[in-house]
Length: 208
Image (cartoon, rainbow, N blue to C red; front, side, top):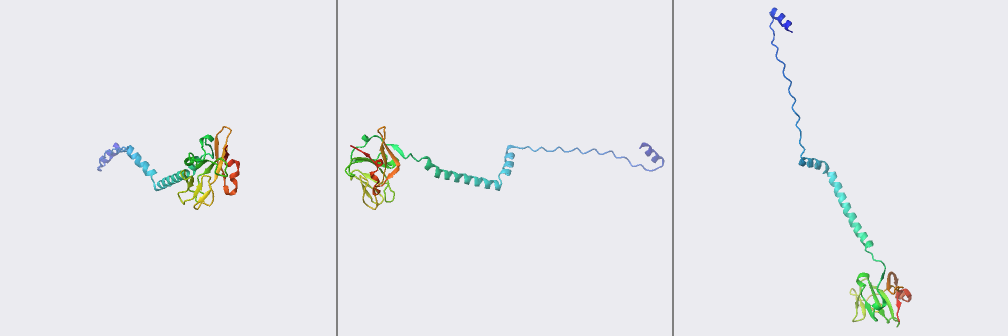
């Protein structure tokens, strides 16, 4: 290179000055993006909270609520259903010519001790459901009758209907005396007087 310059000078040719080499441009450092907690949740929400995600969430919520409502509608009836058989004490707990309402509210039956049906002293259990439209009659001890507050049906202490629209007597349910000396009601057994079923020994306990 130097020799070429000298030859050019000797030949009288102008020599262009050599420019110094330009230094390489330094690479700019990449700016590190700091991920803060706030930016993280913003990114996450932008990914997860989409119209589809919202729609699925709403559908899942509705489905869950519906399932819970259906379960509450169907299951409690099965879970809370009481056994059809239950003990109601001894014969001595029921005085003559009286109606016990001890199990009316909880079990839907009366326990009756009377000799007014065919003149024979009996203990039996009447179902507390009016045979007209299924209302619950009240026992009026002063008048010695069952009276339905809905439509005025009346029944004697025996359960026989005598006034109002009720088409037939009250129904008896099973009543037996166990080996332990305790009376047991069985609501799975029902007896209708008009069908001659009150003569069934499972529908009463004979006294005396």
